[in-house]
Image 1 (cartoon, rainbow, N blue to C red):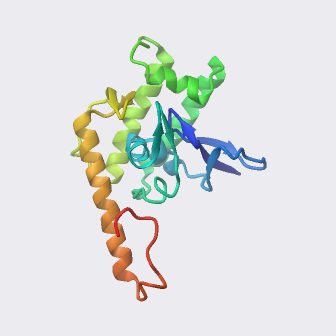
Image 2 (cartoon, helix red, strand yellow):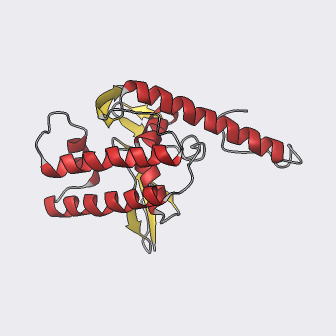
Length: 203
């Protein structure tokens, strides 16, 4: 009944849950999943950093290319906490957007603006994102990455995310996960030509 969508070109790189039974714009990437855990992972700083790194950028916007971003991203196992955080983000963000008449882009313009202070709704969304990131890191068993959330710039884009040291460590570990999964697929393949593993960064 529902799917997750991300605008192909956006500043927020943030998925939304929308009902099916409609014709979707060709400016959207559609993910055929209703999983709240998937929504949490796709909404995390980990996935955003991956998209900014391996997608393409247009000024302060990211062009989300599924073949380079989604299909290469090494998802963690679903946990009860990632499921809970996906539901929490969806519910509270929806309430804020409806109450204040904001779309996704306008909301995250506020969330990612360091000049916006003492706004109860914006502070709450930031708080949820920090908690969500911790849940996703725990799903990878990377609780040792003690990133501090704040306003940080990466590739000329400032946003509310983890600090620079955590960003470097996260990207290094995600890249290692990508390589390990490729090697597992390659070793499991009985016919490398006919069953060549796809959607990896390493060959």
